[in-house]
Length: 75
Image (cartoon, rainbow, N blue to C red; front, side):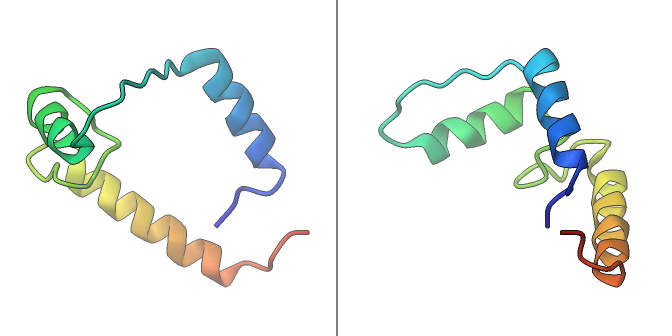
């Protein structure tokens, strides 16, 4: 699913607010598991059920996807 005209706004917000870094790792899934278990990463639902925001975010995403499926496709 895409955000149509909102995609540009999202990209602009990410450019201004998100910090991205990467580090090559021979087993990135091990690093990911460690990071999820030791850092607060509320938007990462995978392997993160213990986070207080997990249930709420899951519900919000489920509702948003259902609503998106009902709307016409914007081109």
